[in-house]
Length: 447
Image (cartoon, rainbow, N blue to C red; front, side, top):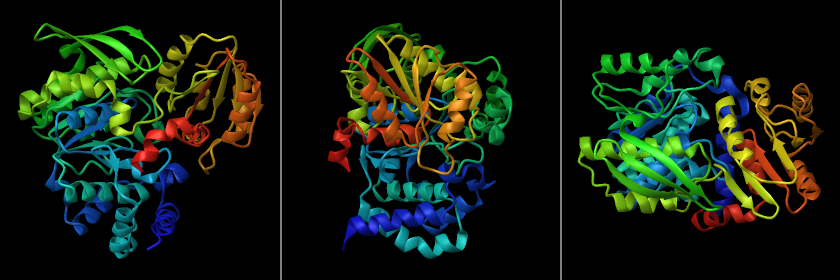
């Protein structure tokens, strides 16, 4: 069996045959959960055979998912992790104890269920959700961390009944699908709150608090705020880790925490994860000792294979990549970028068409050199259009037909004490990662 070739053919089938949000945007989404329910019924309702934690939110849900998975693995639990989108390889979406499912398994799943897929005509995301649930059931995971794709109420993952629901934060993104106000968006995210299942809110926000409270009361679900459980103070940061004093409000205990999750914005995510472990211990009787938490947080990327969150690609000259892709996410990234010292700063950027790009561009500094580009997918905003939009915000630079060309030109123009940020979307970072082999060394061993 020529697995690599058959695997590539299988992926081509999934990408080309099925409606895919990354390519088509809103047109790829289905307005209900019917297809996912049918698919999962056809493969034996695997979601009923493992415990799960469901994570939604505008930003931070990927980081929280990976941190929590790393902690549970380190505590001795066989842990499934479902996230999206992937950066380099499709199988990044479905991991068991940090290791992606095999190419053979993906090929076999699609071949075995192809007739069902043809009959139901699901979206790409609906198939990947059923695939993940089947993998976790077959591998007999103790618990699975399930990240929503978009929204919550109508997200394909929302057929599970988790032991804990987590909503990281709410900000503006996908307004055409989720609503034009924060309460409307929060209402969609709150759709993951299930009857009698505790819910943890990562960030208390005045505009959305009542939405979550009403949904929790209606569901008879206990609601927690991470800020009420933990205080976090960042002490320092180096090129590999950042260091915190974490204070447990209830126990009045203080712990030194080091994490390889770089970026100021991780402080909020870290607090959410620590609060989640408290709830799991108190409500589920899980054993998650502090030493396991500390060890896991110090090497999240190595344990789970996470990429693209303030990821330093090289030091001299300094190059960093981040998948921030909406106004709130980019704002957090740029706060961190301000702390970078450099003679001249360079920014490679690209976006997809359905983002509020003008609002995002208003956050960028005017004194950087810009390299506008687009990823190789239909949803990508053409680089020339982005350049014109950038000029309206006094962001000066040139347009390039590919991420590779933009990065190559930027690197050539940089002096040793310059710095480069690559950002704007998952797809820009994904294409850039292949240009920096060192960022993929761990995954070469996993995949």
